[in-house]
Length: 154
Image 1 (cartoon, rainbow, N blue to C red):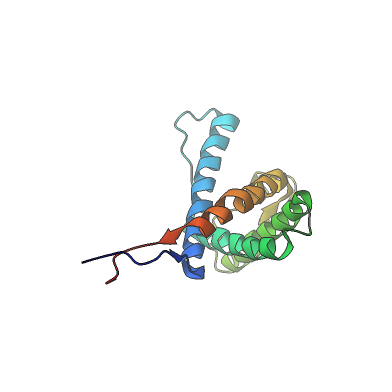
Image 2 (image 1 turned 135 degrees about the vertical axis):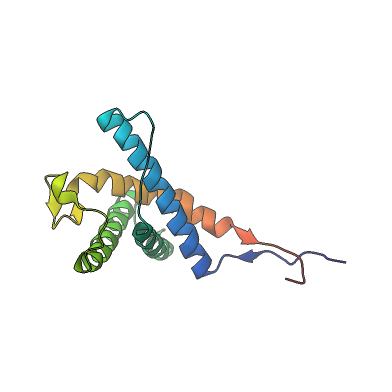
């Protein structure tokens, strides 16, 4: 008969996919709401880029590892600042690589005053800070509670 295997935690590769998908989903929601608030766009159309998947997947994986190293020793506020720097580093690094190939889908130089090379902008400090706290508290904790189960013959 086909019993079930015991649950198996998500692997690093599976968590990367989960983190990337969560990040893309959050970005689509954010950009849709931003357009509604900023420009009165009632259709709530949000956008992202497949390249952003890598930014979110890698940044949240690094945040995950940092969280497990410092969770009991560093306050939430300090962790949020550290995570925000990780997010900015990921966005800037991937953006710089993509820009060399004229493939970077974001350019903050036309929209924001406080940008660096159009790849990152200081105006998003609250967004990255709150988003990274959300990643720690919800996304990473959810990923570590998820488990695969299936028939024993899989």
